[in-house]
Structures are given as structure tokens and as C-alpha cells.
Image (cartoon, rainbow, N blue to C red; front, side):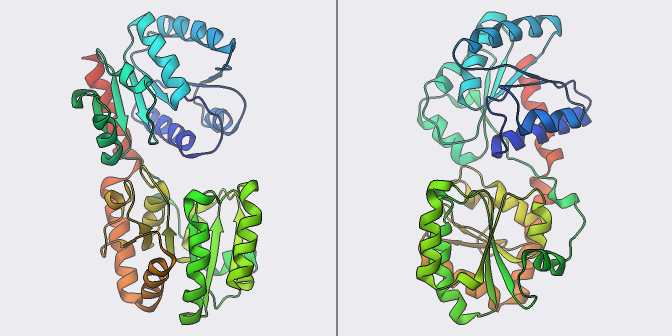
Length: 352
């Protein structure tokens, strides 16, 4: 059950996990709050999906449907994602005695997570950083599991960077420094723009690429920052793309200068495509990006970001070795198969 149907991280996680569990032989059905990306793509994959409005009076209709479905289909486990569905799951568990597994994707102090820590229920943290946060808020360790997110980006064929540059209108001699994620204050695009002023002086072939939806209230500030940095001809903002592996293949290196990350899916996606990553040492990013092995960890200061980016652009062998090591770690630790298997083990603990 996911209380959003959009295309953000939690929804993509629900889709990937549903696919992975289905491949492992489990019956999976998904409840979403209404039309959107998630129910559409689940239907395309042949995964049963039901939509039910979860706010206001819709809460009661959703609860009635779930109680009937748990009993009719003999559901073993209900897995909730995002806070509203956690509340619904808590009530459902009390009414039906079905165990509730709740994924905690973000830093959240809502009281529902403490309420869910009872009987056979489990809270699943997306990182040890989130696990520690939950434990620090009074939730006993026996109710918390850590399951890292996974990616299938290791499975895609390599794309030709030249074709991507032609499509985006970027000169072929440019070396792309990428940032994949929503264009907003928390993802560090302003700091990257500021850093790029220094990078361009040392590496005039460097070209910044932002891939992701632009938050409209943030657009004027981004536009002004680009003008102030004087890099209008050295930045491309693509907007939403559905070919992220292809975009990553065109990058020389990837960046994730976030203010906070409870996991860092964009980092493992870049690593899966063999890219070194410059990331901030916040939240769970040090669990994902190994400093001087798969990338460089920095503070959220433009001068530190610029120094790290310039260093990797200047040291091809070291950067490529980091990329190879990153891909190897993803293949060992962050695949969809590994994620699905870990969740399977969590489910088994709730039903034994």
C-alpha cells in the first residue's frame, strides 16, 4: 500500500519491489490512492492494482476494502509506504491481526511509527542512518530492520554519449558533470552552479547537466544563479526524463550535493552505470558512497564541490577505477534481487 501514485522515490521503490517479489514467486497486489504513474506502470507489468482515495471519507472506504481483501485473499503481510498508508496499515492490523511491515523512506518523527512497533509488526529503515533515527526516538531495536534500496540499472545496455549530446544540443567536446534529482533547494543545484564557476576556469570543457523536474517556485532563483555564475552556455536542464541510465552513460561523473539524504538512490544508480560520484557527507550518503573508493565525499560548500569535481576531471584513471568499484559494489549489495530477498526475509519473520 502506497499513499501516493506519483513518480518519486517511494513510488518507484514500490514498483521495483513488486516486480522483484513477483519474480520470486509471491502473489503481490498493490493499493494506491488514485490515477497516476504508479498504478499505470503496475498494470503494464500485470501486477494487480486497486485505487482507493485515502483522504477524508475515502479513508473509510479504503479501510472497508482492505479488511474484506485481507480476509478474502488470505493476505499474509501488508507492506505500507509513506505516512498516510502507515496510519491505515496500523488500523488494519488492529482489525484483522495481519502483520504490518512499514518502510520508512524519509526522516520522519510522526508518532505512527512508534505505534506500529508492536506484536509481529516490523519497521524497515532504508539505511542505518534511518535505523538509528528510529531507535533514537524510542522504538526498540527488535522492531527495526534495515533493507537498502536496489536498482536494476546494472542490467541496461550502454548508451552512446555522442547521441545524448546531439539530442540535448551539447557540443561533442564537452565533458558532462551530471546531477539527477528534483531541481529544488534541498538537492544542491545552487551550490553546483556556484561550484561550476570555478570548475569552468580549470576545465573549460566541463558542462553541467541537471536531470529532473524543476520545482516551479525555485525556477527564478535557479535562472538568476546561472546568470550570476556566467555559465549560461555551460549548463543544460533536461526536465523529467524516463531514460536515466542513458543520461548517466553520457556523464563523465555524477554529483549528489544534497542537504540531506536518508539513502541516496541517485548515487547507486550512477554507480551502477560505472560513474564516480561526488556527494555530500550527510545522512546515509557515507553508507552508499565510499570516500576515495567509489567517489569523493565533501561538505556542502561550493569550493569543496568544485575541488572534488575538478580533481576527478583531471585524474581519468582514478575516476574510472572509482566507477568500476562502484558498479562492483552495486552488483554485490544494491541490486533489486538483493533487496527483494531481504524483504522476503523480513516478511517471514512476521508470519512465523
